[in-house]
Length: 559
View 1 (cartoon, rainbow, N blue to C red):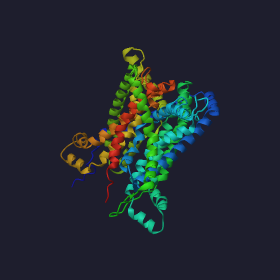
View 2 (view 1 turned 60 degrees about the vertical axis):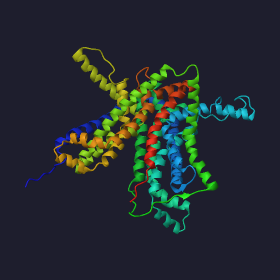
View 3 (view 1 turned 90 degrees about the vertical axis):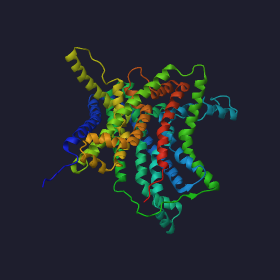
View 4 (view 1 turned 90 degrees about the horizontal axis):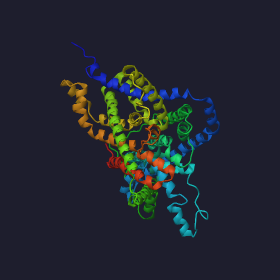
């Protein structure tokens, strides 16, 4: 009898997927290596000066920022999730998806809107002075909104949905039997929340808060507009303003260390804390509230939506309407910036979805023993770019592009006797590559989940009929993956349109996008012109939020 030691997949069938996945993982890792090589060329004197006079303040601000954002996101997200999972009240259904709306609002747009809204000559303070009988800002003005506290509050109320999504799902799926047992032992509702619900939801809360911290570390626009110096803004100013990319790379490595430390803390907090729900138990039924308690709950759960989305969106809509109705209308430069944003986002989306498909396909192809563990590691390495702040990744990409351009220009000179050109550095191609590396994880998770829903028996059946691994992907997997591919493409498209740090640092000269247009106009104080671009980004960002709201609206699976 002939023994078949490896009938599926054969070495030949998985070779292409394996090589492609390893190549993608290497492409993601090379910029981090380039970051280290760039840091070695720094001028020590510049670094020592910044280390003495700038970095201490920036480091303290960064620590306070990520701590404050994590706390606000955890408290607001968990609190709203608990109220919506445990009670029903007027507007419950609307608020359950409306709490996701701040995800459509990039942090730099929120900062831009509140800066104009709360400006001493802005509408809020002008109306307040008119109401109190003051004639001008010299007689009465509110405290300056440009502060660290403002950045923490704004980012916290924009990023809390990361915690809300996970916590609400966990609270909805928790067993009613556990709550009943706790109440029978004399626990109040607060005691049930504190001693039963929160410990069970802790992994989801920690994961969401970690995502909020990573987004806060990636922020450049909001901190810059609010006049708050963080490590990320120091990296940007050291590179752009002081023209010292070596020192910027050194500080970028420090920020990368903070990111890795945050990820390790998140994994440690969730380690060995898996929870299962026994079969046949009852899910928790929400209690109906009425009277003052119901309306107080409505106010509490609506406040994050008002601060994080409704106020800035309403103000942007008003300013955009004023600008459009004026004689000036929409400038041709803004239309060109919108076209650039769409073109770049479409290119990034196509590349990211294709690369994510290769990574997920390779991880599925090798599903046994040591090969599975290796491919799983390759899959994680290929998606690490999203955890790296955009400003940090930009410096690593610049060093990589410079080396690549040097090799390509040497070949061009040898074979064609032609002068050097910018192949990647300072080109749209390089920007698309950088954004693809950063956003690979956005689509990879969705596509991997899509693969997980396809039974392995279909692969085995296709292989038994003589189909190769590639033919199985095309004829079996892709038709079943259409929803996952569409969802991943949608998420990447929106993220690419609103991406600021990478676009700001790597875009070609004289090329504007909607994100850089907002940043530039806000820096010049031209808020009316930027409001149209900001509103356009917000409207585009509503698409994945609506998709996510539909997903969360589906009742949890019960056994």
